[in-house]
Image: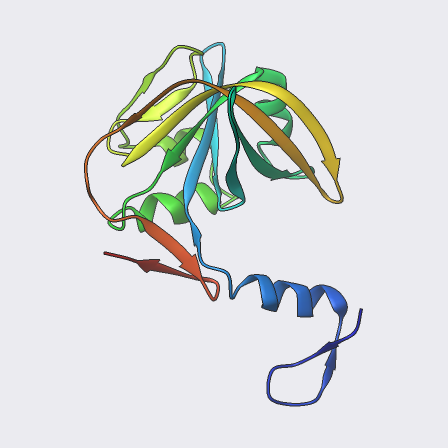
Length: 170
């Protein structure tokens, strides 16, 4: 695969061309969180989608060398919290690998659901999942979760990422 920088005719690396193309696909913004014992971890994830209705399955893609990958996989369960348009600060905080887990969760109300995974009190929707499978996917793992419980917290518009920018919709 070869790439050309937009509007310039200048060749770019295939991975940069790929990133540019993928940035043109609008995606919802979620926080994927897990608990092991008393420790909670979480990160911002936009690679999330439904897989199956029966049984209810979803998938998230986690960078294998990411700060939460091993924690989430070893926890065996996780939550997916769909962020509201007003929650850009939380999205940025959970995307910042320099912050400790405690700093990411600071001033965020959350509760444990059926699996024990943290669910944000003000997420517009959430899923509580048990890990069903983990597959290799290049530099990421494709984590398939079976939905144990789910809920919605109101009609607020969602936060979306497009063009590498957070964009409130609604």
